[in-house]
Image 1: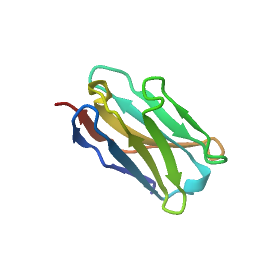
Image 2: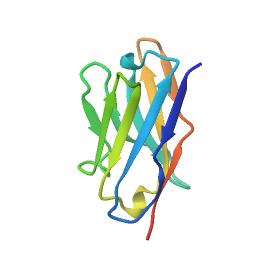
Image 3: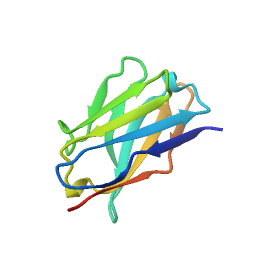
Length: 118
C-alpha cells in the first residue's frame, strides 16, 4: 500500500520560513517524480514545485520561484519543500504528489496546512 505522509505545516508569520516533508512508502521512490501542490480556499490546486527522479532537475511555480526549494533524499524516501520569505498568499493546504510515467501511477498525500498570518 502506497502512502505519502506530509508533515511540517503550521502557523508562521509573514517573512518566516517552514520546511515541509513528505515521507513515502510502498513504492520505488527513486523512480518517481515528486511534486508539491497547494490549494487555497476557493481556488484550484496549483503546482508549487517538482523534481524529477532521473537527474533531480527542478521546476517552480512563478509565485514561489526564488523563495521555495524542493529537494529529495532517495535514501530516506523523502521529498522536502523549504519555504522562505513566506507571504499571506502562501496560505494553503500543501499536498505531496508522486508520479511515474513508467508505472503509470499517480499518488497523493493527505495534505498539510500552512497558514501565514501575523
